[in-house]
Amino acid sequence: MSEEKLSATFNQVAGGLKETAGKLVGDKKMEVEGLVEKTAGKAKELADEATDTAKGLAEEAKDAVEGATEGIKKVFGK
Image 1: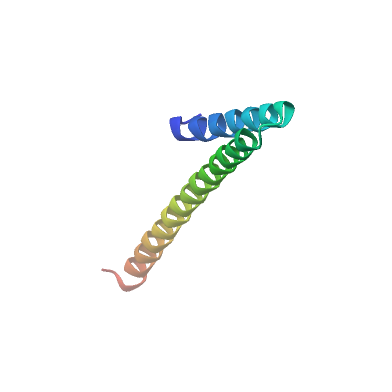
Image 2: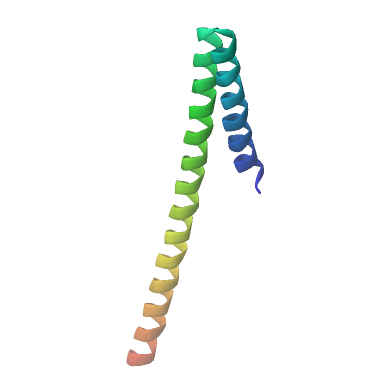
């Protein structure tokens, strides 16, 4: 697991624990802070996944262009 994904997961877990602790002791501020931390961790995780997906799509597009270029060279002999 990458450091970024580990950090996002940690934030989700820590936020969830803080949120639960806030609920148990009746501390609304702690509960909301935990919810915010948990949500921020999930947002970071989703952003990392979107970045990985975009990189993969860019690599596939690059490979497709290179393949098409090679095909054109074979057809036209250049």
